[in-house]
Length: 135
Image (cartoon, rainbow, N blue to C red; front, side, top):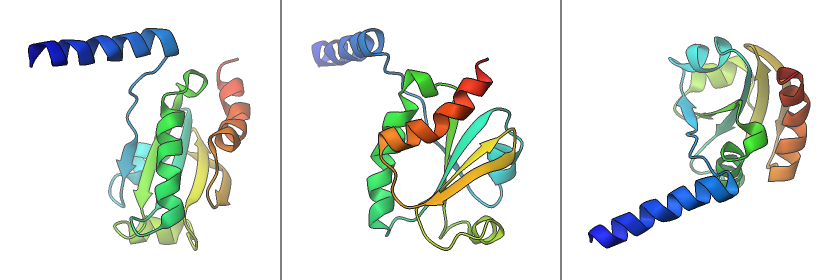
């Protein structure tokens, strides 16, 4: 058992150093925490409005996980909002279809679009904000 745990730790460390894989967590916000997690955040925040029953939302989740491990996107905070559990914030932002993704910069909404977006599409949309932050 100890050997398996040691091997797993070794694989994780190897992956981190060889591939730049970090284990950044994706935050979850709701009506009560959205202001703190998004509107009061400094820097770039990508918000994903989703629901458990939504097929494209389930497809979007692994892309967000991949993005959270991307070195170029290390300064981007990713926040998921379940529309079924957060009706007030969903209504405030006029969410009519999901997934809806929004980019915030220093608490201000900069961009919004609906529908599944692949990794390269997300990276491209975020790149202009990340480049400005790192200047």
